[in-house]
Length: 66
Image (cartoon, rainbow, N blue to C red; front, side):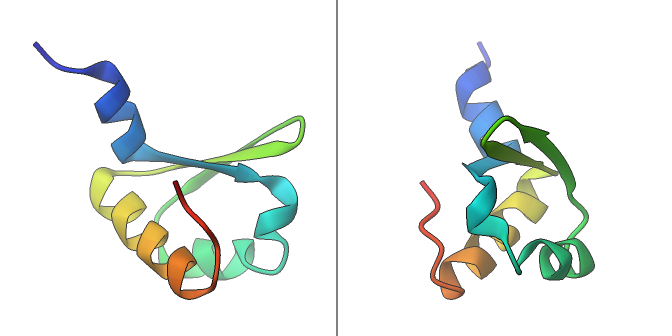
């Protein structure tokens, strides 16, 4: 049986919107992602490959991605 939570974690990153200040346009340029803003958070959605690469890139920029 497929673990939905695991699949969801591999296709999205949720960060405080303020954390993406100055990074969102570069993320959008480098990766195929969708951004959904929710109150104080932004949900970054993409394929598992794109999310993994975006997560690695964000980490190199000093952003803690859980």
